[in-house]
Length: 145
Image (cartoon, rainbow, N blue to C red; front, side, top):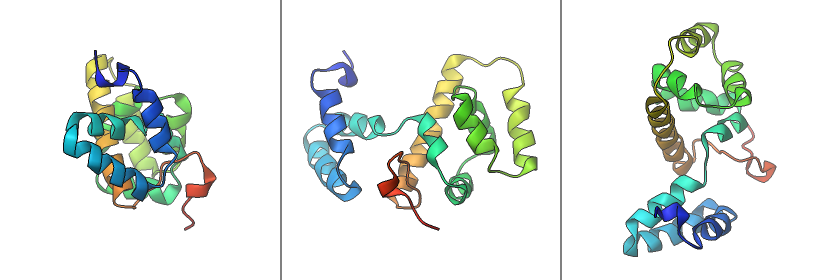
């Protein structure tokens, strides 16, 4: 049984997701001292790939600074259309063409796409933790440029 399937995991993740980033990190650090795998699983549960549709244009630029475009393109194969459209509508035409080449290219193994999505989200979570981007449907966490 994975950590995510254990009783109480979803409840704990939901409660933690409602806290401020500082409060959440303090609690996750305490959990990591006892159960590092649980803390990591909880961190990953806060953000889903399709939450990228809530990035502002400036945050997309910030994300692309540390992200390989071919990796993002492969990951977008597993994204909802709204997420892919949002990101594609806020990048240069040259980047859009490069990503579309991958999106319209030959079929890819689901494992490769999932792995690419996970790698993109690692960069996203790192940038969130550094305060460089915010990934939230909730307008109370919106960054004003």
